[in-house]
Length: 175
Image 1 (spheres, one colour):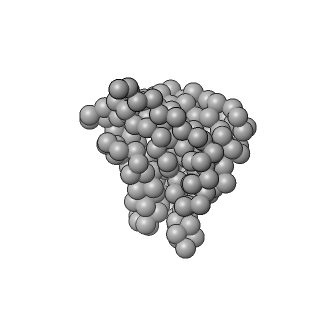
Image 2 (cartoon, rainbow, N blue to C red):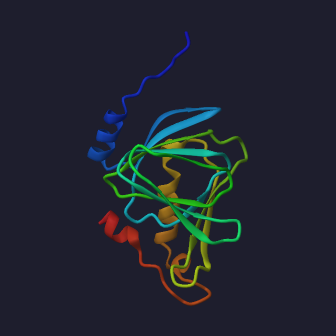
Image 3 (tube, rainbow, N blue to C red):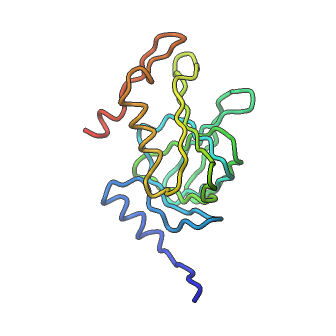
């Protein structure tokens, strides 16, 4: 029998809000990955996805920061109910508060594919740190792991160009 899951978005949003989790995977199949994400107050990295991604704002507003091929940072504002397509390889940073939720649609990772996470100095825009992950299960929340690796290491947060040290945003969040 063919299983076609029906998911009630409001239930997932309520569960994320109650549990404090950031990701609720609806399904993960070889050609599709769909999850609801809760915003993170401290999000600052740029994610480079090996596949196209569609984001739909279920609740609240997102400011999607992205970097042009020339390295310039731009921002697209997604109001509640809006959708955006982000092509594979575009460094992007979906920034929205913890009481906002997005539905994310993309392809599950193929063997050998890597997701990249990059942080840039807020003072001089120099690349601070880069994390790379092979993701076989998005339910393991690779974004949170990348954040722990970055924020829990002062050397990763210290700019080699200007000396600025990015504050540990997780210290407050983990509280």
